Length: 635
Image (cartoon, rainbow, N blue to C red; front, top):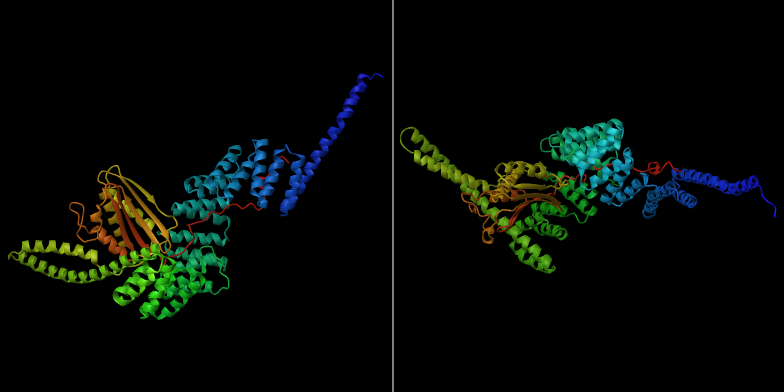
């Protein structure tokens, strides 16, 4: 065996290593070629082929974090979220310093509406890359979706400070301010956004939405914004519908507004296909019907619109109710009853239909009640019991209203006589003929009669659009002045609560009386919770206290004028509040447990209510049209 010299051994070792080096170099070159090809396919939208190339890349570079990250990004784009999440997690395990895998996981959680997990992953990405603007923006979206609008606003504010031309972040910051009812701040952010996208009709539409939500803003500004949206996009049906609703609100003060509203709705309803985000065709037909319903001469057109509404949505209870009201006005009692019954079949809680049916039974056709009882009893026991209970309450309310109207007329005449007596007594006292004592007594009786009259008066409410959430805030603010120390207040106000048509002064009076009653029931302090919600065709306000409560026997007497469980109480507050609700075709109910507290529920109809987007402004996410923000620089 020949001896190998040291130099020869060195050459042999070098020769044995060189093929490995060549293979490694070839592998890197192949990986780069695959990555470039996959990226090209991804940019061209050929997602499936890109995924296949990235899978090959992972086979060649299984220990390379970037390869797994690229595969995850392509899988995310293809909608294969589970596989994408696995790829992102592998990338994060291989290289814990990469922000992109956490960003990708955050997007998956956000798309699956797992917002808590999304916030966690976006926060991890931001800890690794504080300048990762899309991670910050998407964390803001996730926080907003969790109801944390204040924290979401912080993210959007940081995003626009880092990049002032970030239009989406300006828009979403405006949405946060709008949900917090900070209208001026919302408008300022939309102005910045509009400066970047001046020809975006959606921004003008949202300006109109903000203006229409802000009570301090004249309706003319909302009208101008909606018209700008329509000028830029004649097919922006949401802007046309909101413009029609704005005209509908001001039609009492502006005679031309009704005609302009009808024109906008006609433009919408003449189209073969209605594609809208904030309303349905049925709602457009119903709104047109309410406009025609204003004038007796247009009632036939109103009927036609309501029937079109039912064709578009057979479960539109308010349309059946309004058809019934028109038919009853024309003397078609049987047809009207059938229409009201259809409304109840659709929505057994629809209180307006109960009131209308009760009005027919009470005033026109008592014999129909016996016949209809059989019909109701044919239903299942639970449903029959519920309908009959609500119908009985409606009948009692109708009878009570009738009696109160007679009482009001009599007491009004008595009040006038007392005023004459008081005037003569004062004149006698001033001329030295006595009468001072009589005048004082007449004044006391006059004041008591006047207070009773307020509880039974049947004035026609001065209807206009009312923001009930704001009315609740004002009533609670007034009640705070008499709250005992140690009283806490919590408002749970539905941000999607629609505005209702009501007399704002009368509704505010009812809310104040109920809130004052609740506070006075907690002389040693307690907890006041006021909740608003929108259900079907009604808006409800619940005022709950932790006060002394009302004895079961007294709950039945609480609506008797003059009855009070409080020393020195007039017994008129809740009676007046309830009558105000009845004036508005609503209601007021009380439930109470002695020593636990009382809950008062006020109901107002939402039929004829203004429809709109489910919130003042929707978020505008940054769409991932390409996945460049999810790709690393490692490959």
